[in-house]
Image 1 (cartoon, rainbow, N blue to C red):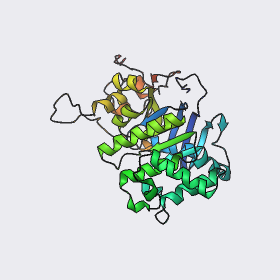
Image 2: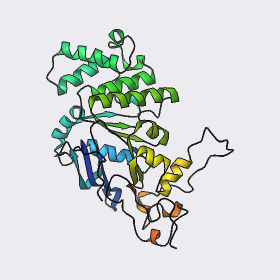
Image 3: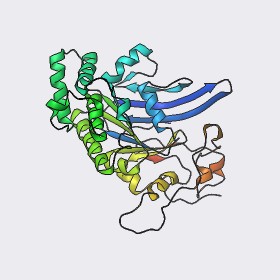
Image 4: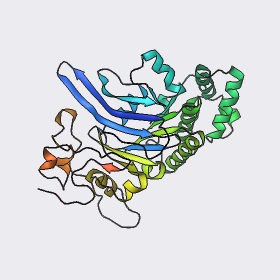
Amino acid sequence: MSVASTTAQAPVLSVRDLRVAFEDWRGSLVAIDGVSFDIAAGEILGIVGESGAGKSLTGTAVIGLLDPPGRIVGGSIHLDGTRIDDLPRHEMRRVRGRRIGAVFQDPLTSLHPLFTVGDQLAETMRAHLDIDRAAARQRALGLLREVGIPSPETRIDQYPHQFSGGMRQRVVLALALCAEPRLVIADEPTTALDVSIQAQITSLLRRLCSERGAAVMLVTHDMGVIAETADRVAVMYAGRVVEIGPVEEVTRAPRHPYTAGLMASIPSIHARASTLRQIDGAMPRLGEIPEGCAFNPRCGKASARCRVERPELPAGGRGAACWHPAGQGADG
């Protein structure tokens, strides 16, 4: 499977046929199965799907933080043309932070409670950049100001617990960007925040990464966040990308029934409804992924072909891995 970026320039991140498996004495369970995508400089690619779809695991594989028994068993990951999925651990540690920044769901997991935010920013910069302590502190002040922390001259010497959840996430964003990475992986960065703060964080993420020319992989289960933030979206189901394309095209005219179900489950502000729509059934467990299209047990359009033959994503920047996309009839 090959999915090219819609941009002409060479991608910052290129993932090709990525396979991740969990292996033990009972055998191997494939959790990511042939995932491919590109992200260009200044572009935000949203990765969306239900819990268990494999979206966070894909981000974890890209950043090189898979825990045993999980491991990459196939495919490749290239950052600015250099393959990184086969780097030794000590070399990958140098890539993280310097060339890849990360923003996670809970900012407290990214911030050390016993060090001030200024010290954490400064030490991260000094670890990856040729910079002295005084210059690092000045850059830290500038970053805090850039991400919207009020009174940064005072807040720089405060500890994470002295910040609200939204302000901590701003600090984590500053931490992810402080070494000027080429790629930022944001894994559910707004889930624990209220709606108004979510909008502020996603807007800030988009503006900062656009200004700095960083590529962004935004992982979320929220199609609303994707629609407001991303340039393109890849919809994942059961460890595979089932639809990919420009976010406006995918959200307005989804081609895969699963994407259509995700969009239909979002409440409309223009119509009153007594109940919310949902996709019947549940994501299959790793050891129970059905033959053919993995979505076929939950799909009202499934035909005999869907139950025995797995569809692939078509080549190019827009497509769906479906035998009956965009309202086409079933063949029985």
